Length: 159
Image 1 (cartoon, rainbow, N blue to C red):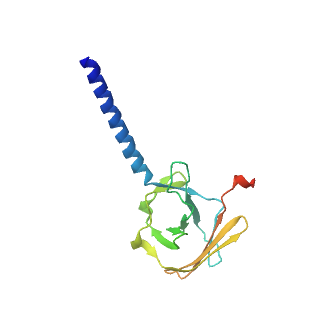
Image 2: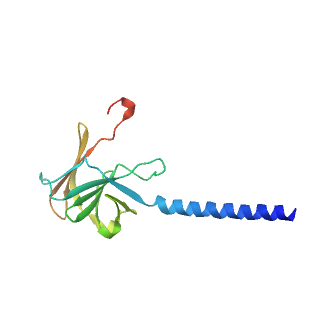
Image 3: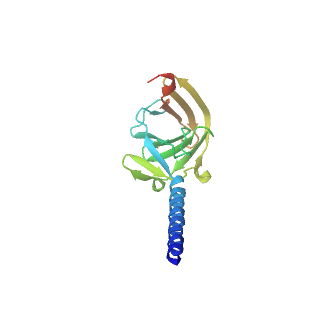
């Protein structure tokens, strides 16, 4: 009888320990944002395409409730900018904040108020299969234009 009691106690302790480790790992991983490149996107500065640019958006999956289509990470030359399209704010991102994952990136939350860039003249328009965002960067004084494809809505039968 004593052996069964000890076996149950040890098994319970191991189960609780493994559950705690799993919760901690999930908590650490949930604060991370996985940025995936959007090859269909377009970027222009003052109606001209920059020489070096890329656009990234957070990956949406069933587990990741934080991933949002309102966040956009843009590479302009050697400068990274994160746009929050909902709040109409832009943040400068330091390259060490991004960890390369192949052609994608992973980061923690990049919305640091001390790295906010002043912006003005926000405009958003639906231009067919894409959404066009225009804004003026306060530090450059230049117009940034970002075009993002609409997500596919398979409920409507559109491809």
